[in-house]
Amino acid sequence: MSKLARRPSFRRGLSSESDRVFQTLILALASVIVLVFVLSVYQLGRDAWPALQAFGWQFFTERTWNPVQGRFGAAAMIIGTLVTSLAALVISVPLAVASALFVAEYAPRWLANPIGYLIELLAAVPSVVYGLWALFVIAPLLARWQTTFFNQELYPERFALFTRCSALWAEGHTTLQCLFVPNTGAGRGLALAIIILTVMILPYTASVARDVIRLVPQDQREAMYALGATKWEVISRAILPYARAGILGGVILALGRALGETLAVAMVIGDSQEMIKSLWGNASTLASVIANQFGDAQETLHRSSVVTLGLTLFFLSVVVNVAARLLIARLTPKGIQ
Image 1: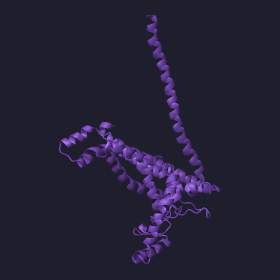
Image 2: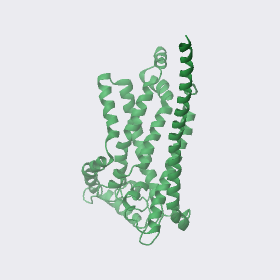
Image 3: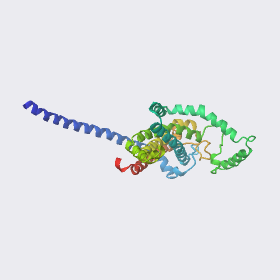
Image 4: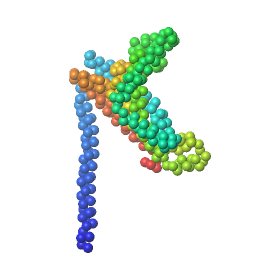
């Protein structure tokens, strides 16, 4: 009996000691994450300080990026990053939500599982493969369309519009109409980057949306059907309002991927540090300029300016994630917070 009485005491002591060891281990691992974040900010800030000291806040508003003249401004790259990411998001979100609704609500199981697997497989494809596919498949198609668009013999009115827009572009200006007019026949450019980003970020929103739609309680669906609601009314009034916070989380995840995508965008966007004049023309993003110029940046100011682009992208991602958390908290139903 004495041995049996001592055994629970031994187990309690062992459990208490194990808890302390486990707590210390978890605290150490969590501290590593914080340490990596702090060191990243410190290292980027230290390397970016020469450029920030030389240009100040004008670095973020200056449009000229000319390493030969020693003039560096990130305005064109910041706008290019926002335009490509937001445009890709606008196109991909309806497609992703539609595919998620089809897989979760309409498709039979034998069809839903393969389609869901194929959607998730898109996220596993390396970005360089997307870049090569865009260059060898999509770019030639866009190039033929762009060449035909302003053909003088086939479409004289379009050619006249192209001529007017070319004069504005030469002066460094553009209009809303000229923004949608092709200005090259190469196929590469901002539009191709948006297309490839759309394909790359679609599975993130689609996968998350599908999972949160499936987590909507079945009672809500049955209650709507009991009231005589149609399939569309059930989806629009019972499913989507309940799942909107989760869907938004997938959208923000896709936006983070779009903001930071480097290789595929750098391969297709054309690498022009000028302000956007046409959605079909060459442009650049923060990530693409870093990928293309960091290895060739030998002078201190040039290298520091490229690192400052990385610091800008870093804080832009942090701001997006913080805003997303606040928005998701407001949209999450109170019962599941």
